[in-house]
Image 1 (cartoon, rainbow, N blue to C red):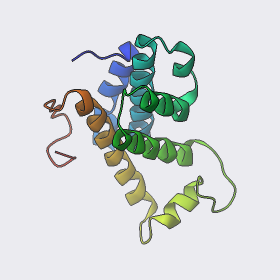
Image 2 (image 1 turned 90 degrees about the vertical axis):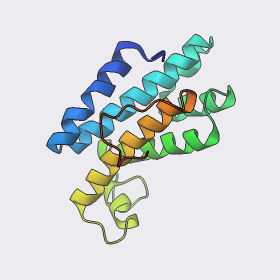
Image 3 (image 1 turned 90 degrees about the horizontal axis):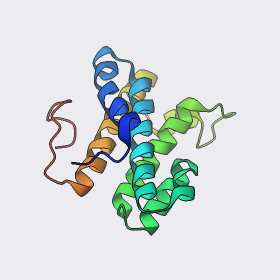
Image 4 (image 1 turned 180 degrees about the horizontal axis):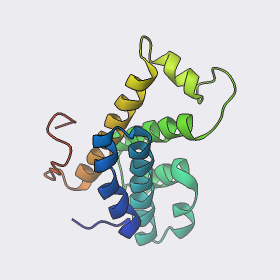
Amino acid sequence: MFLVGGTPALTALNEMQSPYIWGNFLSVIDNAHIFVEQTLGGSLILSGQDKAAEGGLAAVVARSLDYGLIDQEIADRVDELRRMRIAYSHAHVGLKERSYMGRLISKENTLDWEMIQQDAKDAIIIVVDLLRHDSPDHRPGIFGDDLGN
């Protein structure tokens, strides 16, 4: 398996394990975002699409889809990760869809901590899904069998 995101992607992948175990779930989400953006951006660069690789995750996903580097299912999952990270990383007033509180309300009957923990699990699954996209037999095993196998 060729890790096209280089050292930043490898470091982010390695750094997802410990924060998850210790309950530092926002770190997991951030590292998943780093891994995905570096990986897809690296694929675009290898395809000669340097400018597209520098456009932020939404643009990187759109171009990766346009160039057939990922399919719609992976694009949707990565967009889910992007929206998840935005809710935690950027301040938004009120109950807007992009806000933390808007996200929490959309999860109905979820407590803050439960949503953050579930988002971290989902972020890991998204990373694994991306890894499996080009290598469907890849089974990292770092996080156990209950996360998307």
